[in-house]
Image (cartoon, rainbow, N blue to C red; front, side, top):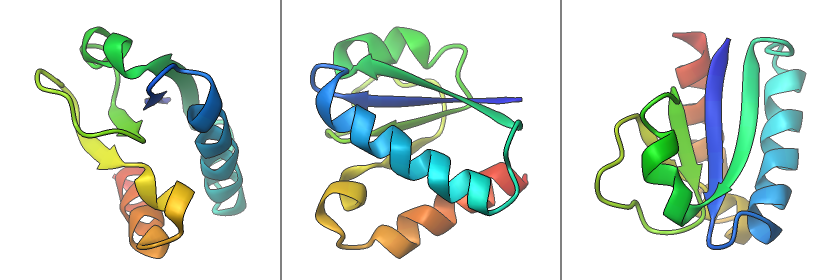
Amino acid sequence: MKTIIVACGSGVATSTAVVAKITDLLDSHGFNGEYQLQQCSIAEAVAKSKTADLLIATTAKPQGIECPFISGIPFLTGIGKAGVEQQILDFMAK
């Protein structure tokens, strides 16, 4: 089971949208039951990264992150979304 943290400024608005998109992506590619998504604010992300397998954030990468990081901004803008989706799928396939 891989733990994926999804962070945004407040841990509520945009992270909720991104969690839904990541869930759809992973489930449609056969990863249902192989991951756990957790939402948080970017302020909480550094502490949570100590036990997470991956951090996806809709903000700039904060200093001190201890797990791999993927920008979630393409889920909001649509620009580069396919590339980010592939990074997530590659991560899950490891």
